[in-house]
Image 1 (cartoon, rainbow, N blue to C red):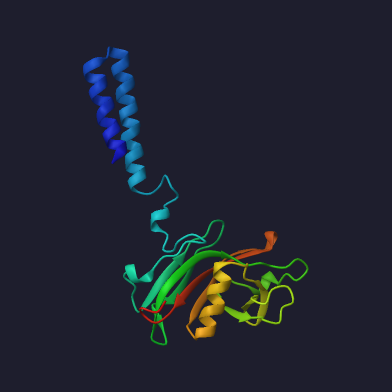
Image 2: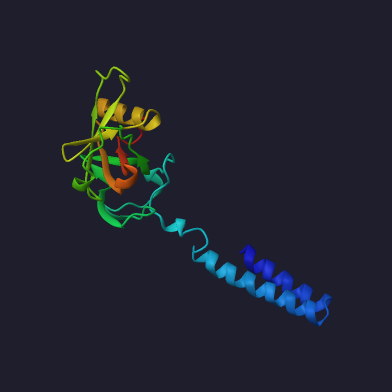
Length: 198
C-alpha cells in the first residue's frame, strides 16, 4: 500500500508544483512506485517468503493458529535445493502438532561425514539420545535410514527433542536440504503433544 501512496504523492506534486521537466520526472517516479507496489504485493521483492509454509530456523510457529488438514501436503523450498513434497501429519497417535521448525541445521562431525549419496530430500529423520556421550550428556544423534548423520546442536532444539522423547510425545522430521560440497544438511521438524500440555 505504501508504494501506491507514494505514487499518488509524486503525481500530485508533479502536476501542481512543477514545470514540464519536473512534472515528467515526478510521473516517471510515480510509475516506478506503482510497479514496485505490484511486485511487492505478489511477493517478488522479498523472495516470496510469504508463501513459505514454515518459519525459518529458530522461530516457532504454533500449529494451533493455523488450519491444518488431516494430512497436509507441504512444499519445502529451501535455498539452492530442489523442491520436495512431503506428507506432514496434522497429528500422530492422537497428539496434535504443537510446534514446527524449518531449516534446522545438523552438526556433522569432521571425519565422520555420512555418505551423502545415500541421502535424499524428504527422507525421514530419527533422533536417538546419547546420555553416555562424554562431551555432552544431552547429546542427540541424528539418524536417517539407520545412517548416523550427525548430532543436534546444543540449545533449544536439543532440549525439546530430549524432553519430547522422555514424555513419549511424537516428533516428525525429514530432510529438506542437502549440500554434500559443504558437508551440510537441514531438516524440517514438527513436535506433537497433548492439547494444553506445557
